[in-house]
Each structure stands twice: as structure tokens, then as C-alpha cells.
Image (cartoon, rainbow, N blue to C red):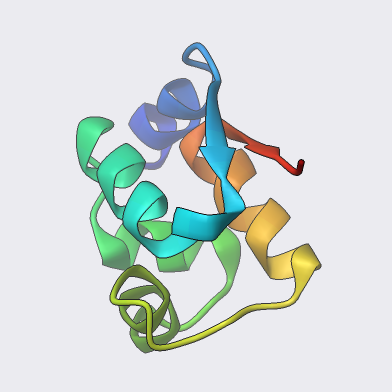
Length: 79
């Protein structure tokens, strides 16, 4: 599955709006058929961290956000 995930990260990037970060991460992850566990494995973050972010219960450092968005093939738009 790791090679499948690496291929998925190359797919056309989409803009991710910071105000809806968790919601957008979840939508993009699911659109690429990446589980929270697989995303956690790729990024080195805990599955609970991914879940909390997606549910809006957690804010992450910009480094962690960039790691996640790169893994799911989206870009961040800061306005």
C-alpha cells in the first residue's frame, strides 16, 4: 500500500484553506483512499493526532500541517 500512497501524493494538487483545515484534510485523504492509519505511517504522526485534527479538536504546527498536506497531495492557501 505504501507505493499506492506515494502514487496518490503525486496526483494533481488542490488548494487547502486553513480555516477548514481538518475538514479539508479528511476530504482529501478519503478522496485518495488513504486511511488515517496509512497517513499516520507516512507522516510519522499518531493516528489519534490525525483524527483530532480532522474533527477540529486539535491545532498542529505548520511543519506538521505541511507534512500532512504533502502526503495527501494538497497545497495550503494562506490569504
